[in-house]
Image (cartoon, rainbow, N blue to C red; front, side, top):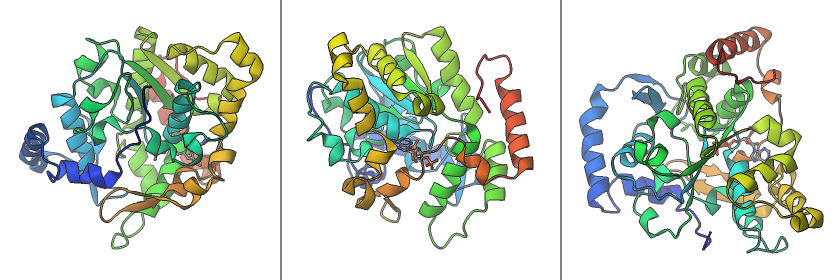
Length: 341
Ligand code: PAP
């Protein structure tokens, strides 16, 4: 990375898509959005009142849908772009921190690293959130996205040699993490969503960027077909052997760790800097807020809740666990992908 470019806050994002930051392409996206919105299928929302289904994926109306439409219609990828891709609550925050620290490791010392004073979400932006800014970003651009692989334009996946790092997580932990997070963000005038309701919606695929299993499988298949372009990671592997995964990450991104770096413990320093224990104790992550819209402001500490593998099971009934495991086995059958539980 040539420079450290903090992401725009989400207020900028919502202004962008509401047309307050003017641009011809954003306006075109907004017009198309208004045309299609009334005819899209609707499902119950977790944070907003409802979600809409577009090209098979469930999205919040407004920012997420407009973001996807803008990416599909107008985004100009560069062959050097790197995308951190994920379904929400699978480890995005952690992956952002690790990748940022890995790519910039010769640039910043660990004692005064930007991650000590900037939240991981502030270190690199969401692709679908900042159409006006991206052209001015120096290469290689490091961006994140929640967009499913199958919905990305060919200009990103076929015509260019962009690289993707995808992180997935056991669906039970994703569901519970998401349910707790979304209820914190849900406006007071909407009744909280119960775990039973969230479970049903998740199983039916009705959750942001869902169905979850389709999201995972899209990137999984791409990682098998073009391993040089898509690195597929699991949250659980990262929790188990973080140093091994960080070395793979460095290698994949074209920044392999040298023997000298390894012997000096640089990999372990990165792991320590980005660890749940370290990040969740930093003032910036404990006390700052991220503005998702004029109404929704989220405490950054909610992005670092427990960081445990298997925590979902302590919230779900045996019956729920059985059902979600069955859906997972059925959906992943023949793909070669398994979640250990
Ligand atoms: P996002 O999609 O809203 O950005 P994301 O970062 O993908 O969320 O996921 C949040 C989960 O990752 C939280 O899981 P939990 O609710 O089960 O606790 C969060 O605690 C966990 N997480 C965030 N940062 C780290 C980290 N450094 N190490 C381990 N887990 C982390």
